Length: 263
Ligand SMILES: Nc1ncnc2c1ncn2[C@@H]1O[C@H](COP(=O)(O)OP(=O)(O)OP(=O)(O)O)[C@@H](O)[C@H]1O
Ligand SMILES: [Mg+2]
Image 1 (spheres, protein in one colour):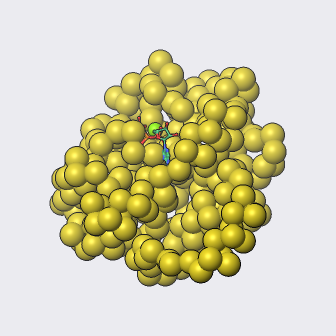
Image 2 (tube, rainbow, N blue to C red; image 1 turned 120 degrees about the vertical axis):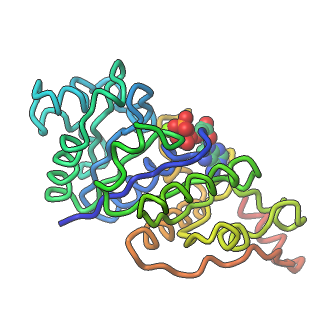
């Protein structure tokens, strides 16, 4: 039996879909069977992030309304053969879905896949409520900007009131701003929100570049980014290691020349 996760955020555009696609690719590379569900009903994006847009025939609405079978709704990735996607209906609305139908879909998927990732919409509307309580864990994505932090706090309080215990992922962290003190250390942000910190992904232009090339954030050439997704996946899978603070390393002249030659 696999595990299911829902990625949500208070504020939009913080990287939920980027992280869902990258975690899926990271897990698929390690041999896990992975199903991604685009739960951002009406605003799907995972088909584009995984370069599967030309293969979409059926969506989640077709599935719950029995216009297709589960196997017909699964869109398999060309490169990662153990990774597939179910898209949310482009014309559908969150109110078109009954929780029990979505629960059935998620349950069936966890029987067939090791990892089921549902990419949710921003905010705490019907779109998110459709999926809370029917997944094993809720992952709250935020960036270190004050608006995102405040909206994450509000969302976390609402989830707590509903009996849910989310964990957080901090995305788009700019190392230099942390060094300069303009942005707090990720652990400080996590303790101010009183949420377990699963991982930190740095801000990188390579992530946007990967997107333009039809690749996910886990497929940049940067080993550090790949390693941070691997660490995040371990934490998501329950192997929670403390996230180290960002510390500026003072490199010797020899190290700097070696790095320069490597570039
Ligand atoms: N770590 C990062 N570094 C640089 N760019 C990033 C990073 N994470 C995400 N982005 C960029 O941020 C933008 C928004 O990301 P994404 O669509 O994944 O956010 P989202 O939370 O799913 O948005 P929405 O709420 O609209 O669904 C994209 O252009 C993506 O490439
Ligand atoms: Mg999204």
